[in-house]
Length: 278
Image (tube, rainbow, N blue to C red; front, side, top):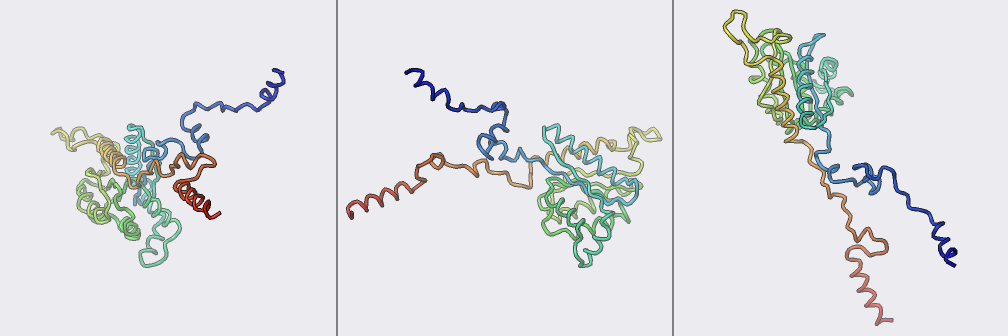
């Protein structure tokens, strides 16, 4: 009798326990559907996007080199805070024809639209232009003339400029900063200007032996500016955090066969009213 009574219990299927039940977050996602833990529904789980735009014309281009160095410095600063980032570098020279066509009222080309979309969704922007006639180039300005209004609103922007001599070092403050302020972006307090002699030269002392001729070598200025942009990207995100309880389901709705919310009171009232009538 005891064996017959225990037989069906022995033949019942055993509950399967996954091998990676103790794995963090991924196992929770499988056990509880799409809802994992609160960390995955907060801003900290987002990977920020860093987009650099440069208007370099030559090959190689000092503007492209400066943009690459600023990207690496910003990414290194984010990684020092245990944050990852996706990066994209956009060269405006291949888009010159589409920028010119859009600037005279023509349609926006596919490649230009992709660049505008990347810039609009970026958590941080790096903008570098060569200096022509004491200001940014027409190609650089033409690109920002065709982007939609508000595309850079509240976007942290690190500005950079390159020129043949240090006589143009104020172009970041006299030309670039007013431009991005007008576009409602958030320019960093630090901007990086690089002359031709800055690349590959430390310039610890002047050639005449009178001491340092620069406040800091180019590598130091790039690292400081990248750290400031990384801090703004972390502190002032353009995308609102996702509410961790946005898809919360009350426990009463999860129990099978139990009326939801006020359905119990309504159903009880109907049943009570129907009794005397019967």
